[in-house]
Image 1 (tube, one colour):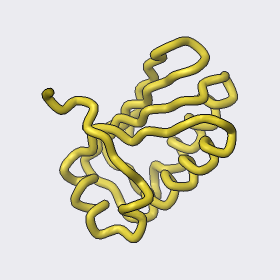
Image 2 (image 1 turned 180 degrees about the vertical axis):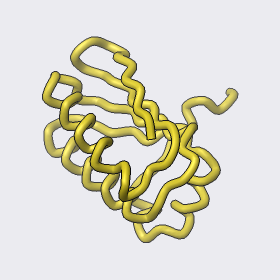
Image 3 (image 1 turned 120 degrees about the horizontal axis):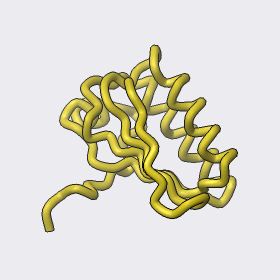
Image 4 (image 1 turned 90 degrees about the vertical axis):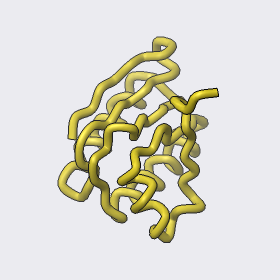
Length: 108
């Protein structure tokens, strides 16, 4: 998995673009980057999942924990542009209704 940080508004909004596999082997790197971004002052994060090629159910529970932690600090986490593998796995996940996904790249 690779992560790309794109500041939307300095020190407040940040987009994290995930590429590759999101699973138990890579989720620690995502948690570390998320913690770093929050420590730098960003409070509203968008995680772009359009290039995620594989994910597992454990990752959804971790994303849920990240989302709740950010919410408790007055911020927000938006999971955006889910790839087909993400949609497929989430449709079978116990947390599917707790992790709303947004299609920010969808044509209007």
